[in-house]
Length: 81
Image (cartoon, rainbow, N blue to C red; front, side):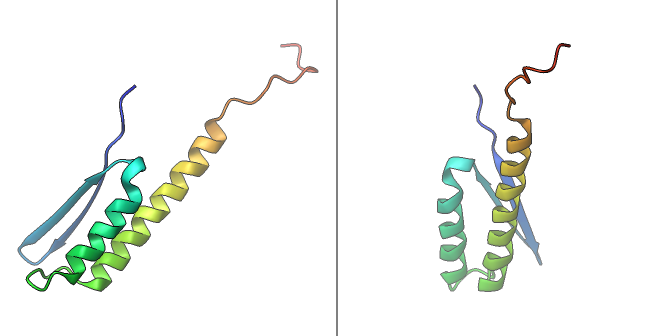
């Protein structure tokens, strides 16, 4: 079974921030955004970190709902099809 890789990116001026993570490392990715925001030599701000963190969380919720509806439901005993 292959793992899906999530990609989130920010283009800010001439800089490109591209982050790859899987669902198991989502929280570590959010921590990494904070480390980038705290780095004084990067243009990556706390606002950037907050926006991308929110997008990561929204995507996780969307996927959870999607998987919830894909879950196989038990067969209805009244369904004779």
